[in-house]
Length: 345
Image (tube, rainbow, N blue to C red; front, side, top):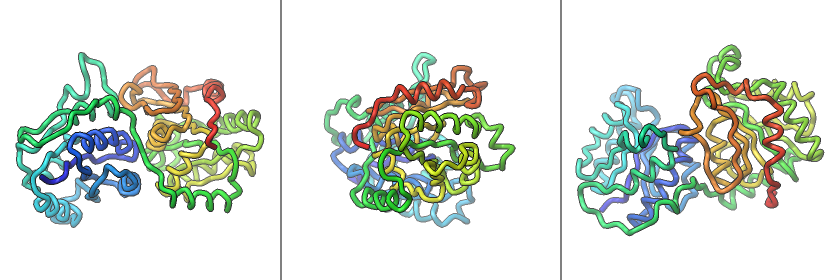
């Protein structure tokens, strides 16, 4: 039998929320779990997990097949890996077409269903959806062990000693030793179409609000360093926050300095994170980092981070009409102030 395979393409947060399924299938089948996915962030995110086998990356599902070598490689890999249980978490046409080319046996496939997503009109969180799928068997009778799925509900990530060493050097280089509080102001869609689109995005929180939060952090923790987290494309937006905060030397714009392994190591050690609804918030929850997360139009009932630490969710009460900009800075400050101290920092 080939190792179990999960097919799931998504952003960083989607892949964090997939880890309960990876761990559940590893426990059920007694083998590492292969993953067919997209996104350069996925291999470094999943590689430290002992439950993960091979990660097969597709650079694009929407590019025509004849023009996409990564699709050729994925199809060749699917055809060569042999029969085994295949858990298909995606329902979009490009992914299903790719799997058709891979000649998967229909008796090996467990497909996501509508009743996995909700029950009696109540939306399930993504990790709960994946646990439902993971407890189903393909038609072909592969041997499994009995497990309790609730034991795998929380997303779980691993940080290597090498990444902790890299983080220590980075922190020393920038004078970031001691207590670090992290801000995550953007997500991958927030800053794609310039400043106008950024300001109108449901997940946008104004620089003045972030500056007010920074002032409250320093009032409570005068020596704390605040690290602005984000992708390289978000550097300019984070710089606006730094300007609103008076370019205080205790604040550091790390948009160009946080590859996934370093970000995970930082989340493992940080005092806390305040974030909009985005991937690093899910990673923080998985690593037990105390967290305040602000929701806009996305539903917390579907996207709320879960994990072993303290997580406070603000916003999202008005459904698609919700905007992060409508969350008062005072509410975020109060939520952050109520987070427990993290002794590990």
